[in-house]
View 1 (cartoon, rainbow, N blue to C red):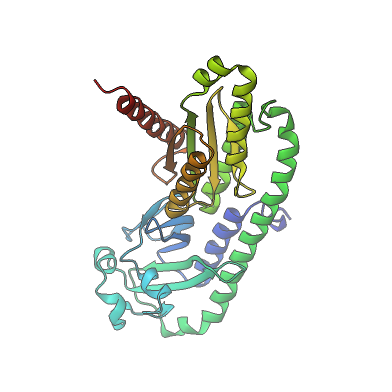
View 2: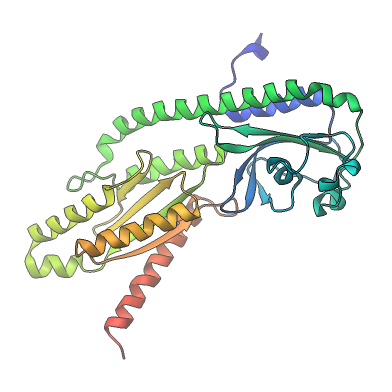
Length: 323
């Protein structure tokens, strides 16, 4: 009976789907991946290797450049979804990936979100050619791809529901003056979001900023003036934020922003908008941002964002106090 218990998450469902597919269509490697086109890579969300002779391997959570992959050709409609003998497909047979790993057969079924956006693909490769009967099962493979994305969408919706509960729980972890999360709330929230983004392949970025003149402002004009200055900054930080972004006051004059589902161009756009808003509101702020990727974890991402912010602040001081 235990094998009839519902799956607890999308990744478990995807991995089991790959195992079932391989039972009926044995291939050396099966994978469900998400495409990050701005970073030009694909991220493996679930993967299973079944043939030791196949040198290609990509663990769940790993990423590779997708520039010269078979799946990119397939998703750009430059090749078929199924190739029982890849040497017969002109657009596939000379790819560097095919030659490097001696790939002889291929399956690739696109994955789409509920609003029709391209998400990634369900794919398989092997070093042996397959029977032409493989083409008869394309409708079944497409059904499986839709089922995988249904599980993905359901997990996304479940996460949204959980976030509402988490926000209620975190009411006690807020800064009294600004109403933003405090450092404890920031750390707790980000640990949860890091796990979710890793499992679903969702991009995110960290922005760290520090007010350049809060201490001087408060000492010259008083605490009340300093508080008003902080509240003005808080209003700017909240403007235009995604409902799943997280904003926190990390110290007296330091703040952090978690930008959910933010790719490189989105993050750059956000930082430009923040700089413009700070300038319009006469707020002097130093900013550092960092994009999370598969080669750096949450803590490394935060530290690099802080380092970039510190560099900017140091450069400002050097410019205002030349030797």
